[in-house]
Length: 233
Length: 209
Image 1: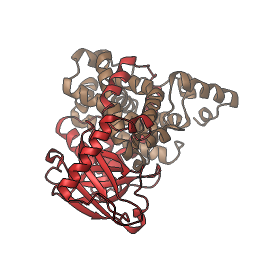
Image 2: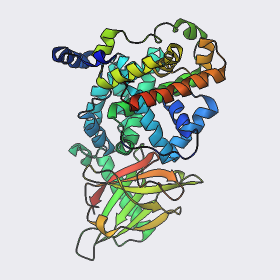
Image 3: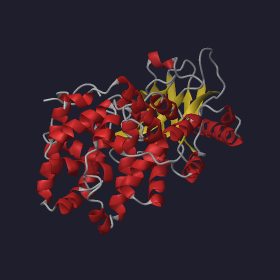
Image 4: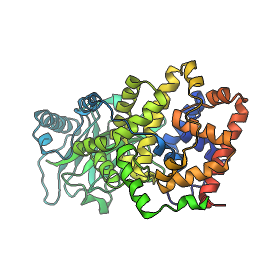
């Protein structure tokens, strides 16, 4: 852990410490939990306390869990795309999803899906929630500068007071923000010039739930609600 | 006090060898960070490897708090679902990977414990074990960080150190601690807040007065 976390409000570092230790309950615990999700400085203070206290866990002996836990986990996560295993790309279900997503995108957005220009793109990504259904479709225009997103299911629209933010995860680097997604079902983002080349087949687009206006820190602070790999169209 | 920090080389080696068996040192994160990074990209094989390397520790942590095997199993499953979903948030937190994982496991277990309530018998029966500071042998086997933390806990009044350890290991709430130590709730708050701040001050000056 490096650097000091300046916490302007008195008592906030104490609250972070109490939350990290786990002694809060009821409304106090909920309040701290919410802060940890929405307030980057508070989240970092909590992380710092977790780090400070974690050697206490050295005294707790490891106990191998029964195999059933891992099996249940694998069943639960099996609907989620696997970015690495080649087998995944052979999945009929996936191709159906991509085909459906592409046609829905074409219908909804009126794209000409055939490239007219040379240069990188067009690219497409079906952005899936954990359940595996495509909830957003992203289309990156030729040249990589224009990214259009269509939300396919309004159930995943951001809650009041929250925004969804789009992230690019590429080459094992930390996710880079591509901007806040508009609240309407279709939105268009302009990709910064330096990032256009990085949006290529194999990169991952992810959507996180953030405070209004997007992450205040440039890093995702809320849960990732959906993600999917970019593919050549 | 200072002597305790000097462990002969052979002893240190023995200590390191012990890690694989019983302990995953919380500061030892070689390879686990990489696995979490790959998990954040949706890599299922990395997730499987991460589970294999860390689940015994996290199960131990969950079991210690929940004390009931089937509940600890549920907690462990939820913990790894959160790891899968939130792996992309790890790199920004500046935390060691084991500290991050253990925090997720503890929060999950504590949430379940608070939701179901702790049987009153647990409160009394548990009193002795977790308050005890590690014996010298245990302290010697622990990593540098754990040794510094143990030294700094030793500087706190014994009851406060005991309450702090009990809170961390067993997931006690302020209310439960107040009832166990038979002090008013506000007294317990003051104990732990001052204890935590004292702990950090001690760690920041290197654990040696």
